Amino acid sequence: MVVNVVKNTNPISIPDTIDLTAHMDIPATIQNPYPVRYKLVSATYHSGADFNAGHYAAGVTGPALPFRAERAQFFCNDAAITDLPPTDAHPNAITENPMQGDFNATTLYYERIMPASIPMKRS
Image (cartoon, rainbow, N blue to C red; front, side, top):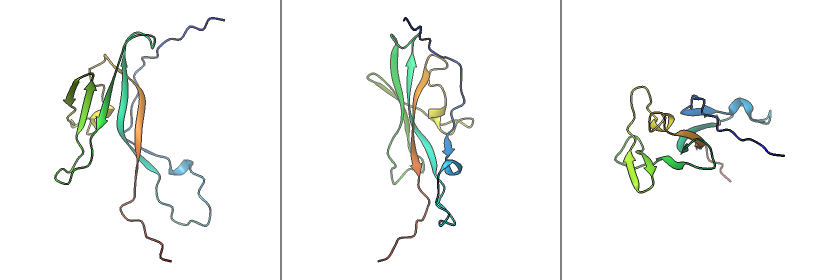
């Protein structure tokens, strides 16, 4: 049996944050659960007609630094690493196609957004 795999290049909207709270199985004993939200921090992109050939690159978010309000973002394409500056339309530059259509997002990486304060248990 021969399977013909075709790369789907239909554009999709990539959310900056996702909220999975409504999809969690939270015990009824927890009255005010903390939200289960995630922020997009990186993406793997592919350029090429299909997955048997082509080129991969990545959009990544740098570490939090004490002197910066926002974490810097970069486009990593082999040895070339360039800034991905935010725009008014896309404050999270990872959500935008880095090469105006030449690349397609294949894998998205999110990290948990922790609540500002979580009460500590005292023993």
